[in-house]
Structure formats: structure tokens, C-alpha cells
Length: 143
Length: 141
Image (tube, rainbow over the protein chains, first blue to last red):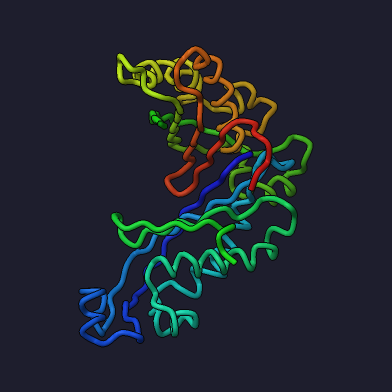
């Protein structure tokens, strides 16, 4: 069994603000991340998939994975304002925790369009908001 | 506890299966099928799992692991054309997956007497693409 991991990058802006909380509470909770004009990051996303070798001597066809990530993540997210341009973040705070879950769910829901067989399986999404802040989520933990 | 030693080698390879046509190889492996080959700066991370020796405080002296990696992997692989010069890649396509498995097979016998059990072999083909191999364990995912 092999795990293959591929890293992707995109830049996007966001603002952390919970509508259930008051403005002072939001400022207190999120600090600079609550700046009303938003701010941005160079996100790095690692996608890991698991499987046995196929006839080509590979566990994952990287071309297929690239296509899926380009379509589900890079095209919609790159150089976007996450709060304003991604539907899920109209109601959900775009923390990197929530972003990791959103990316993992998109990949999981559309996995069969490029990997119709039993293998490989999506295992994990790991996303670095900055070089110091890293979040990971396992596909089997997502409903 | 898991301990890891990193090593690097540079090598060339091509991904082609001799029974397939040029078009089929191109479709399957893309640019990696170029019959003239191409190269990478591979990075290898080998991890052992075990408890530290109560006296030395070490699972395995990483210098020993370095020597095993140098002899069994770096010397045969570094600055070589894998398909032509490094068996089994004369008959096994040197994908990153197969390289990870070959490295596991090369070093595992040399670690059987150590306190540390071979835990995983990670091979970076580029900084943005890597494979982890943990032996032939039963499928679980």
C-alpha cells in the first residue's frame, strides 16, 4: 500500500468574523484577522491518496489528481475573496480549519469523476495558511 | 518513537513499458515517458520506530542509519540512469512508488538486528510530489 502526496498552491483573501458575535467580541477573538477589509495568504495544500500499485507501477495517476484539484480547488479559490466568492463561506467563517474541510469535501464528493475504481482512495488534506500554521483533516472524518 | 534520517540522490529515469506503443506510453506517463530520460533531485526520508535504549538513549545511532543508506541506496542510485544501471529498474518501471519499495527492500534486511523497526520510506521526486511506503501491510483505508 502506498500513500502519494501532491502539493498545490493558491493565493486568496479572507476575513474572520463570526456573525453571532458582536464587533468588539470579533475583534477580541480574531485580532488582526478580523480587519474589515480582509487580508490574504499563500495557501499550500497537500492532498494524499492511498492505494496499491496499478498496472503502470503507480498508485495514483497524478494527471487525474491534478485535474480534480484544478477543477474543484484552484479554479474556484485562487485569487478570490473566500468570504464573498465561495458559497460555503457566506455562512461559515473561512478559518483554515473550515477551509480544509471544504476542500476535503469537494475532493471527496467529486473523487469518482476521475478515480472511478476502488483505488486510490482520498486519505488526507493538509493545508498551510502560513509556514507556521498548518491544519489537516482526514477524508474518513468528513460526512 | 519514530526517528527519521534524510538523504538525497540525483538520478535520471524514464517511465515506459516496453510492451506498449509510443502513443500508449505517452498517454499513460506523459512527459515522463520521454525515451531519452530526464532527472530529479530525489529526497529520501527513512523512519524507524522503536524505544530508545535505556543506556545510550538512542533507538538507533543515526550515523549507522546514514551508513546503511549510503551503502545500500545512495551509492548505487546517485548520478545513475535508473533504468539502465540500477536493477530491478531494467524490468520494473522506476515510478516513485516502485523506487520507494525498492529502497525498503534494500535497507530492511540491514535493520533487522536494530532496536528500531523500519516504519516508512518517503521519497520526494520533487518538493511537491512524494510517496510514503510502509511495507506490504494489509489494505486499510
